[in-house]
Length: 203
Image 1 (spheres, rainbow, N blue to C red):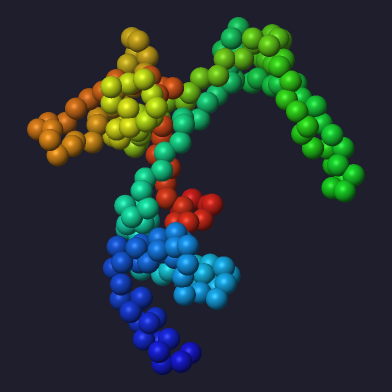
Image 2 (cartoon, rainbow, N blue to C red):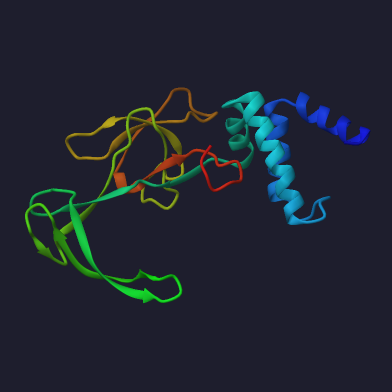
């Protein structure tokens, strides 16, 4: 390794998690950079990720998320039988033989569902319901939800056992003197996704 490269590497080793997070975000989001190829860019990003995780543990993903922005997705949903409430529900589908791969692959999903527990069958057997996150989990009221606090983030407090949905403790805004609590339906709530640091696998 040449002396000029050692100096750069030393600067990276001394960097705090925020500096490394900004550098990684710059590498991943820049349209043009000082790299000769995408492979060279990816290799440098891998070095920053490895150093950040090794030196700063969980502080590095948090710093990257603060730079790149939080990510939310809809709540996971479970298919339940409308007759017995079991989640052991299957659906009819068609498969196509893949001669090159030597196996069957999914070609299409049909309307009919079947419950493996009670034997109910038909296109209206399955109800899809969102799975409620636990207390303390970070969430957001979906930006397009028909809700007065759409787009706001916070944490789950507890379920509302009377009308359904969840009570959320909203993140306090600068112009708010006290914390606010909002009630939102499950289909209006999105759950926080841990940062991937520019990769498809969660860190």
